[in-house]
Image 1 (cartoon, rainbow, N blue to C red):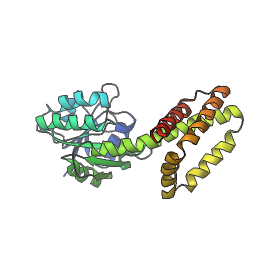
Image 2: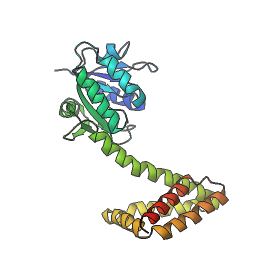
Image 3: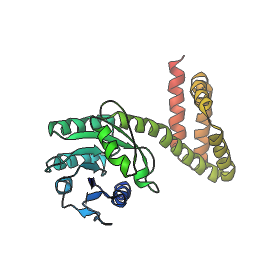
Image 4: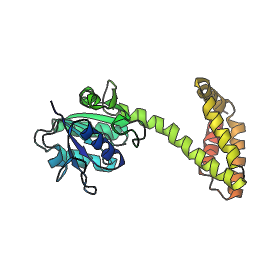
Length: 256
């Protein structure tokens, strides 16, 4: 049986997923107020129009648009399952689930767990909420990689954002450090050093970082204070270095 999927939002993620769904044989009804539907998608005039008769609706627009999209799409005739794929807080996902329940629409919060470009529909996804298993049952045979978590909407978002705290924070620290290394004339040296540290990292690295940070908070706060001064002298705004100094100072004060 041919599956009909509505895709709301045709940006980088939504557009790639929609194109892959078409290639996989799904009927794709698409709507985006700024980007026209292409590649054999059926254009919708609105969220409501695109969602009408869809077995599954993928909301891939933005967190700030997710509530409005759900309210509009829930009014569609014969709408099946609503999967919100936007990056939003667990609280927002729970709010969306409550709205969907009031409208008698099956809901799942789906988190995209890796960059979509180059992967499209094959990008790893994590789903939770009442309709999580149904989302996986529809998308996985089409080539998706959706894993499910037992429990309410918001659990998948929680996992994604916990990872973001680490990975996006790491990325910001690397960018700041490389800018300072460039100003100091040793960019390639630091690049090699960072790459080696990441290559050598394993489970024990996490334990060492956790234990060492607590045990040596005072000394490391002083070290990051010096690093903050150095970045300022080099003309690089010490955003991450200053935040790390302040974090370590608070940690040290708690253990005195």
